[in-house]
Image 1 (tube, helix red, strand yellow):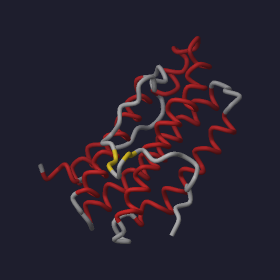
Image 2 (image 1 turned 60 degrees about the horizontal axis):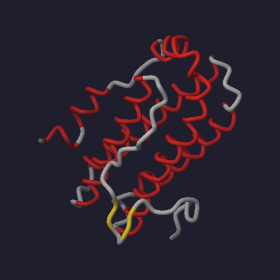
Image 3 (image 1 turned 30 degrees about the vertical axis):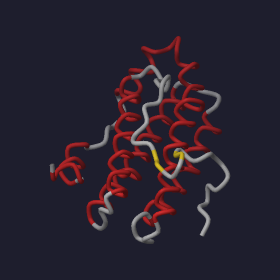
Image 4 (image 1 turned 60 degrees about the vertical axis):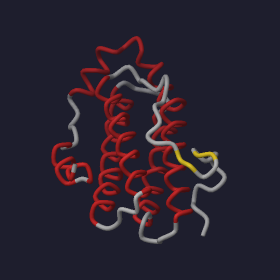
Length: 178
């Protein structure tokens, strides 16, 4: 079965080996809270990759997938709220990109590990890596450039937005067993 993203982005792997939580050079948006979100999401992708690589199934994998879906949605909400309050003219297109990824994650991520299909798991993970890299470097760069001369206002807006409860995720995730 083909993944919904097939053909949109090149895989993040070569020779069948995916990369572990790539670091995206130049992906900073200039706001530490949103940059931290990006780093947390990249670490969570690395945890997911480890769980897939070592065939960790069931509850642990489910919690990581649940976290990725939930935290991604919260992060997108923070970005969208910032763009709305700062009157970024690219909000509609950016939100559309977020909505597509939200729908893809909700439809595709729960299938990881459940299908017992390594190719599906690898392709889904590769797509996630590619999408985040492309989105962070290209699309987020658009609002980062826009807010560059309004960083104090943007920081005030972002700092006023609710944050995810990371300690509860960390206590229940795969890394809590280490």
